[in-house]
Length: 212
Image (tube, rainbow, N blue to C red):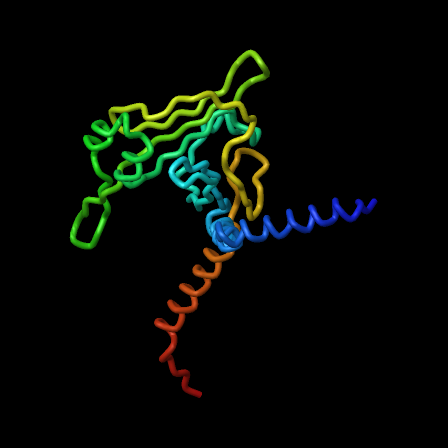
């Protein structure tokens, strides 16, 4: 049922606040990018990050191949542990974890492939993992580290991971989806086979003349 006038005003104000937050964080654009990722690779991912430096929640796109789960743990689609391997600016890490500044500065930089070989980046590889709690007896855990240093180890109280997922078509097993590319691959291979056969036929018989 409809609320009173005061409740309706608060609801409209909350709606405007949510719309403003969506615009600030560009969540519509992020959602479009994640949907495109789902169409290509089967799974689109947006990470929800509480940023201490910015004093707010930040939303970032993540690629399918940056996330990992044990296949057996994830077989039923609800793994207890999830892992992420990404890269973060060295300066940002030093600001967020000043107590580990020396270890962060010692960490090897990410090497980027280029036409001329490899290029050195100012980013360092970061490893992050979450373990969801099991009931009230087995607590969860969230850890973040770079090579040679544990930057963060804290309890994880939530029964979900800090990601929003979009699947083009959810598989019956595991946490990854099927994308358009994978779904149409058999048809595309058959089309390629037919085209090759047609091309071979033209090469062999395209200039054949039959006398009458």
